[in-house]
Length: 283
Length: 319
Image (cartoon, rainbow over all chains, first blue to last red):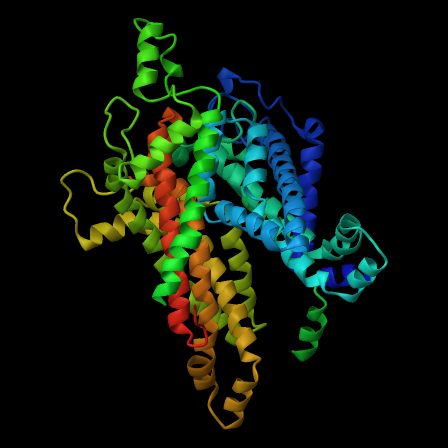
């Protein structure tokens, strides 16, 4: 663990990403304490105000405080990211393990199913389903989660295929362990590190997808603030041109959070990968 | 090769397409509400009219019957009629919009390759230099920046502030279709759509070339006294480019997904904007048609990527 941290720390980008990400998570958790105003309270006398002491990031076209909406929007973005990855990981975990462990017909069937999910334009499917079931924060989580299971499933299948032939699995089988025990007690813990990396990167892309869906008006519906639907509200050209405080902060927030998560994911991958030490020696 | 293509189409392509349309049709049918829901509550429309409309649209049939009818028509090349008042054939609607989407997607793919590959090569040649770190950093930026935010930024700077490019759209009525006109309208949307691919390809090219450069045959090439330029560009590059070809097939679904957002930002008259309009109207035949169209395009794209991989690499033989 110590060695792991040392390796992670060597990647400066990852370290900075981790700090920024921590700040965003804290800001989201403590949003009720930090927000200077009620994020949903409209104040028609204070519409379209540029940043000021009272409203550090200005107000939107309904007179709501942008900073408070950003803080609460962070809660939504991060929770959609975490929950949808939780869903895709659970489905991918079960199906990927089954495919990798049993092989044969089970494997073919599950992987064909993965092909079906994998080779189609994710966002078009997502907007279709979201429009049919009605946009909501929970539907967004479920849609993003259910549509992204093939990633973790393929990864786990590959790990299972690799680990299935190792000696310790043969030993466990010889000792009479049941398939379920071998799969989840012996093989799965060894697949932990690639899974963690893929889950981290998965959170980044889920946050991007949520923001994209909300931007199209098919993700988190207003009045709840989400970074994507804040950008959606700023679409009219007079707002884009004349009131950049309404759309630049939420756009930057998505960008900086996703960038930080990607850096952390990359750092984790390098830190887990033992080959890293060898390549460092070569150079 | 032909046997491979035929098998690929019939054994893999058709079952996947069937499974996809089946699942999608199922989801659409079991969802609450229907295309006639909005008619309830409209004055002057009684229950009888609604029932007649439902029957007319074939909504009274059970799911398997509806799906079988739809599939039967599709096999004959008929995608049905749009549910909206125009009742136009879905195939016409799609054909009208498809060229714009394909043009935009192709431009961003070409842009991604033309910029991404040289940048990746330079980054690998000068590994751990300042240039390499800058490329790595900007590659991360490219994959992390949301396309809608990047698109709005470009729109803000080049269309609204500097006023040098149009704020979206694609040739006004009566405007002459000159080459310069195409560039003007395509520039911002295709950069927006291609950015994450530029970043992805540059990173992939870098690691692919670095891996090849570690091989023995290049040590031999260097040992017999070849210059570094010949070693890299003549011997290593050929091999390093091969894996990039597979990346092409992999990125096509992402390009089409991105097109939905980019078309929305730049008011681009393509399939993506048609899709958004259709889902908001619950126009089932159009939704199914567009999804099917994208699925077929992606399948063809993947097939082309795999075939070009085999053509480029004599070691690969599909049986």
